[in-house]
Image (cartoon, rainbow, N blue to C red):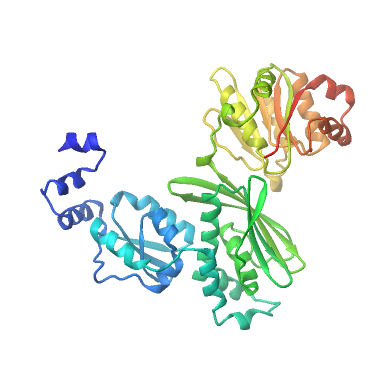
Length: 430
């Protein structure tokens, strides 16, 4: 039986059931006792509307659960695999709940309940928005201009808003989007996400949800939901399907409410392989020569979200050997790579690119990555590092490679220093 389990990749319990040594109920009872999980009875525990409103079919499928009940920020779910407890905890974090209680059920009961729970429910944003538009609160909130903190918290915590935000996140991650935009206007509210440099519009939610959506995003990013007059920046970390997804959140007060833009970084879909970046073979050969130089400055330029950091990290991944020390400084650190010393920027305590770069030079580095050259001070220190025998990689916001020289001169860097240090510039766009 062990040999069959190993060769087929099936679990030992599944093999035992298939051989008729135990039935599904006996197996569930044994696993529940072993893992200290409650046993569920899906004949008695039906999926309640509140739970189905919170957990969409897409989400349930991704986390391998069936939502059962939801009350007082406690969700109960049916699971079929006791090793799925990590996903249950990830679901709790995603939904911002106090607790998710798992109930272990048989595979047969799970499949039957799954069909019944989501029967006739097309899992789409358009359907959810229709439900929201039919909500009786629409007329009451449509013209509100001032909402107290308690109301904001209540709206942000409501199941429909959570489900809408989570559904947008899951769709954007599934389609490998780079950014999600939430934008309030005078008469409506737009949701869009960017794929390959192009924005695609999603079905618009009711305008009265503008404050609730902004507040929900702020809660997830640990921002101040009461502060609606100033821009705020934060971060959301999610684990979806076992993969960690980092989200950088930026809010901006506008004429008709708060706009929010979320930068997505799904590390599971990014292969840090310089050969898989789609760079022309001739250009790639030249780029390889540049990154293997002993000193100098190598820059990658292009529009926001065009993959500049991914290109540089792919280069560092290739250069990452035990014989050399590589230090990076970014705002924030986008990729975590074993063997690299990585320093996050923290403007609140004075940890700027310039300050970090000064300290890095005292750490005996061989290769340095600076997330972005934004000002003259950072540019000057990068040049000093190059002149003292280091290779420095960084990014710059310009439209093409020749414009990089103009941009550096505009910062105040002398032409002879640019000529002496800059080894090459790679311009890219999606």
